[in-house]
Length: 257
Image (cartoon, rainbow, N blue to C red; front, side):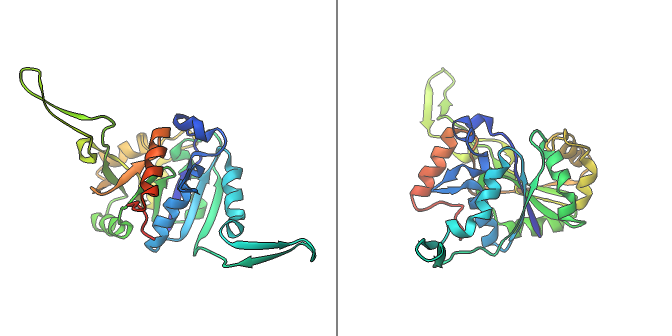
């Protein structure tokens, strides 16, 4: 099954980093968050990727064009015809298709543009800025059992501030740090879509999360796979710093490989 990753946006809310590279190429632990997402899928047997590129797409293309070089030990022997010797080469069992889906194209438009690469079959779809410990095989099984056109992974939004327990007389009866379960359920990405969803994607201005998803919900064709485990997006610089700290701890929940 193919995995489609949306990686073409501007990432304006993390402009401190995204002014030089596209948001999915911002690094966590020295590797792009896009790499972390793909490693997570690959660890569970999904290795056929379609990347929807846009803003600074050349950075993504160059990363994969030189992936073999970046992940191996090499010797450059300039004295002998500029020979390059590769040592301890590291490779991935991946097939990666990089598609220019336009600079200003919306999410639904980007998915629409990769239709020919997906074909007439179900596919997975996610965003290029979130990591999780979602069980993708369980997600796929759930989608099949529901028999609907689309399934999204519902996660707790969490909150960014400490939580107050207020008494009736205005005093603070309790105070604690935020927990993920404090927030409402939101669309965390990690979706499974049937090819019929393409019919709802009109043009480049189509926002997947608006009319298409609303139509699917209204017609009873949208399921939610509830995930109460780890999920974290990289929407701001603070988010990146949080993810970097989690990775540095050596116990990143999304590291399944």
